[in-house]
Image 1 (cartoon, rainbow, N blue to C red):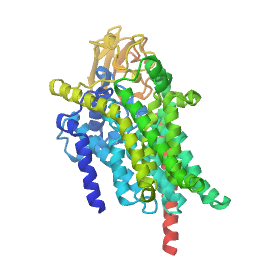
Image 2 (cartoon, rainbow, N blue to C red):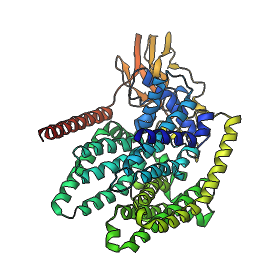
Image 3 (tube, rainbow, N blue to C red):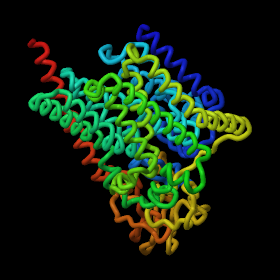
Image 4 (cartoon, helix red, strand yellow):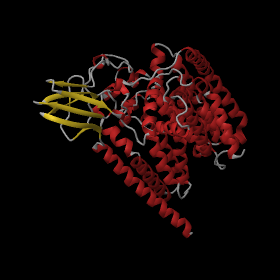
Amino acid sequence: MARSRTALFLLIAAALLLAPSLMLGTMMSHSSPQNLTWAGQFAEQFRAGILYPRFLAESFDRMGGPAFYFYPPIAFWLDALLSVVTFDAFSVSYRQSLSSLLLLWASGLAMYAWLDAKEVSPPRAALYGALAYMVAPYHLVDHYYRGAYAEFAAYAVFPIVMLAVRQIAEQRRFAPILLAVSYAALPMTHLPTALLISLTALPLYVLYRGWLTGATRPASAFFLRCALGGALGLGLAAIYLVPALTLQDWIPVEDFWAGGYRIENWLLIPIARQGGLIEMMLVIASASAAYAIAAAGVLATLAWRGPRQAWRSEAACWAVICLLSVALVAGLVPWFWRVPLVAKVQFSWRLMIVVEFAAISALCLAPWSTQRRALSYVLMLAMIALVPGLAEMATAIRTRIALAQTEREEPADLKQFLPAGYPQKPDGGYAELSLEPVHGLPTIACTPQPRLCRADNERFGAMRVEIAGDAPTTVVLRRFFFPFWRLDPALPLAPTQPLQLVSFTAPAGHHSWHLERVTVPAEKKGWAISGLSLALLLAWALILRRRQRAQ
């Protein structure tokens, strides 16, 4: 099948899979309220010329929030670009559905590219694998249950990272450049997913490809090129990573890993023992069982052909990675989730992206030409194991369609992006914002009251402030305090207690100030590192290009 026809076929498949959302707009899910409010504000600033919006002025009842100092931007850049090319013709709800369609399509194209190397799989297997990746249960759980828009985008990047590693092993000239760019994109789509991939599939596949070389010198050269590509990728992502990792004392970051976000609450085996697997967890468990059956069946089929040949095949590599990942999701290796950074990914089943990718890769790379009957039985057993999860998902989608026809999802914010120290309800849910104390607050308050105390709101949270009085006065503005605020002319700013509002002391006399957001040092460091990494990457690409021409 020609590549253009393949791309069209995958686009049609993506449209069918997301048909309810494309017809009804964003449907109710765990994170859909946050997606709506963030995408709307992000796109508005992007259209105004702010290419990397970080502060969302309309959040928290227009008190302002720093969501994109911490949340990855790539999926929202796509949505913002879509708003530009469509002249903002669609509502945010429908535009989010179109953005998700593009991401699902991109994931299929990426998986097809990964599988379309003729020496490892026939074209038809690549097409089937791309479809399977698009329709994979957790992939659709991310859309229909969780509304995990950023994590949904990671599915489009993951296959390209693996493809780059394979091409480095094949000594493709520009493969390290591809690895750097794709690996940079991975954390900028979804940081917890990037961490889990970086600790499981990526190092295991690199080790496998290095071992496959069979000699120390080529293996060392391969590892070095992978390491350089990965390091440059992290450098490129520094514009996001440096602020996200170093500014966490601005927000109540511990709320991301407390209560219902603790990983031990979501391991499959303990959940099954305690209360049974229902709803979304039933889908994840059913998918885990199906993919484990598929991976084990591929290994058994390969072993039947001969152990030595089996263990050197790429299908075996991905089958092993799948089984290891299923064991982690199930909770059979609990110490893994106690590693400090891993403990912060919130949910063990985020690793399902690796499970699905690995199982599908193993099946597509298996020797169907010689073991068709055995592999067909394996596939049949895996499909039977999927039935409970697919039935649950069908029921859930029907329920969401019915709700979408009678109710519209409303934008909302996430309490984890309130300023640190702001009083919150104990044990409140992630969307319980506790904003009652700031409702009705005036734009500006002055104590003692001067002759003139005025503030005018400007775009994207800025303010024009004018004070006239015979004595110093304490000014409180209706903005949450974050260190990026600055007064021009400069005066020291401080947070009020306990509401964490912007305040300053205005001297006697008649004065005017402009409250504006400035670039903080962490942002500057991120830009500097990313700029240097980009310069090095371009220099490397230029050297490779010249060598290619010289040959």
